Image (cartoon, one colour):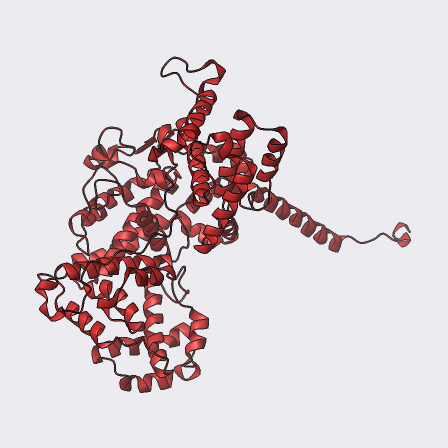
Length: 603
């Protein structure tokens, strides 16, 4: 690395940026714990040691993930140039000119919005690698290019196409681009998800009337029994959520069968739910998932088959031999995979590691305050008129949102992500009312109330939050939420709706954005945890204190006790194993003290 620092001036970097790179190189002394002359300037060795891509938990030498990523990026940049590693493919002349015009006409008061070159550049570079002019792009090329992209790359590619379309719409204002763009707007790539079947109930296809007529008859039997509908409004043990689940499974079967042309017009449910049809549906579903690079060991497949078999065996007139085949099908390993009825292997491995990591357990208790502290540092710089990059300011807001997310999960109730995301703070039926609390926070207790109709298993949630939630909530409502609404770092201000976690619309925060904020913020402070794992942490804390508190853990999670026992039974095994080890140690200690008697002792 000494050589790397000496040659840095000849690598062609701007002088202002060269200072940052030099500082990162010198920081290697602290990171490696050795002098620069003992650290090899080897790109492959650097990548093996520090990795590439997403950072889950930063090395101990760095306080934050962002600091580690900045150092790694700078050092890797220098090593790449030193090693003569091939740089990004240069753009062909026409694509380079388009990108140059975009850069000259973007920003405030310009034809194009800020950072348009980044969005549009994703698409411009793809045809350039194939020596294809932008004007020659076709829908077929778009679909073939998108087919081999990951989900994240595919999203960027779609946004780039939308940026190109905006450029096409305003090309009259940019005469230098004449003849260099496609004549018409570009289509987005074909959606890789299966096309919705015309046999779904929502399609109102007359060919499927018999199937849905049979389905409605079965649902009435499940709700009201043989006696038919009871008095209007009378309660039924078979809830609407269960009806929706069964309808979803029938829709799933019809989608697979219509894709294989296995249904005849006017077919009824008995003709649809057969052993041969279910085998065809399963094989087609697995093949389609593999083609998209998705996991096939999903418990959803078992759920669909179980519901369909239940309908056929209990409510349809089928032969005894067919009943036996259907029941056996449900037990096939390809359908009843290892994930059925269990915590996923990834989540179980995470909570088992958490059980062994005492430092992480301690950190989890104070994670909300740690996140809030991290956010406050950046916000203080912005409030003091110090230079703060928009990306850093956005990270501070994400961390602030995550601080409240974690605080509610650990100090009010470990609700599911869907319930946390849709919490309302004002208006009729607000689940976490904050108007009176903000008027005088010291005199108001916080009550989290979610009706059973909004919860997965229809169990009402009604909890009084711990006292230490109040300061975090007050800080979030005073510092974080107003900035998201009035001064978003990238100008994408959120709406001031009734939701505690707002979005750019009148609805709650978008699902993927809500989850990624939580995950990225936790990683920013060196804590690797996803939102659902907070429920596992709460159950673990209860059962680690009292191994027999299955009922309490189930009540807090809103699950039934048998589910909790099934998911966390390994804790009993671990504690039993630990108790056995303690007995072995005590026996070993005793054997060292024991001396075998001798006849001479009695003389």
